[in-house]
Length: 432
Image (tube, rainbow, N blue to C red; front, side, top):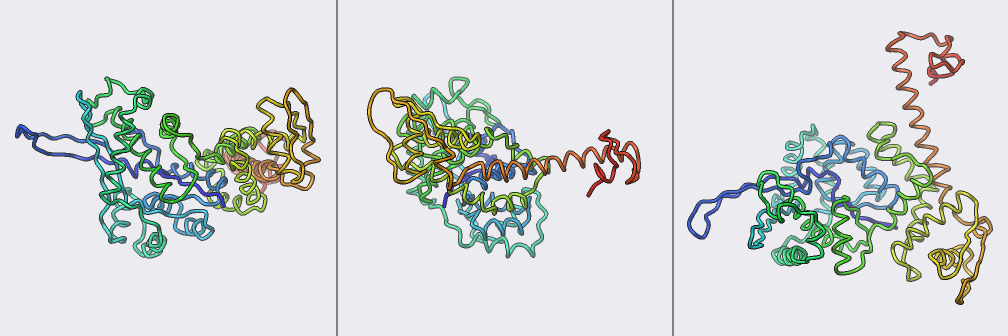
């Protein structure tokens, strides 16, 4: 089963303001404030942030989220839908102890102060009530036992002093790496000048959260993590500085295949209310969707010493060829040779790719190779695209119908439809 960690669904869950009052080495009273978020007060609306989780649930069998994001999903979707996702292993919860990180003081001497804050409230009912009070969700207390029941078995993040010390060292290591610092896009020579809303502080915070999230996926034993774009770019820099990354292959391939096949933007369809999470559940449960996730995981696995980029490219090329019922034309010693090396063992099992040097052309019909094999377009075109397009068409019809009724009043079922189709209203915009 394919699994991925989604560390942030609602950014507001980590964006907190803190105040500090202290006495410096000269006995002078000092005070400051700082934020623990990763965006300078540019928040995604609570009403639509959850939509970004939808395509990840179609791509992976199981998505891991933290407790606060779970509470948020219950607030916007209801405990019924969230319980269904959990019962089907589509969602699993990890208790990150509500840990938040902020780098709140970097001066000319390069002194960094890293703050770690965590929720030490072990009374789950109080914690749940406090969350919904702060975020303005109206949840009946009678629902709390059902909500808490899903949190109790969740794995807890180690937030011991030793773990914090290790994380602190790793963050400082990154902030001392010139390759990383030079790619952060800092301003004002990297100084934090506006304590209340400083751009640089949020950038530094992203470095801190990246390290926290990497620690978390290592603790979970997962290979995939779906990061916000700004932190993903830091991951690319960090891994470029130290190691090769090995994350989110399936999701990258899935989103690219959806683009190639003309699938509507799924999160946007949700935010436009053309579909809802019940639709996501129906799509996930389709037999071709299940087989598609298996296929995608198999394609993107590094079974043949391929890089992550190879796996994504193969998935996309394989999909295009199946969709067009075309052929792979492979020339040795170019980028497409890897496709032949991958497709033949998967497709027919017993044929090993030819070996040799020089330019040698080989053409294999996808239709022949996959005559009894799974084709990705069985799901993407035949189900996913048709399903969402149909819902978008219904939404468009309903919007137009509401416009007609608003401006024309009641329309008889046997009247001609105002859209100009020439059909009766009951056979057009007035149909059920």
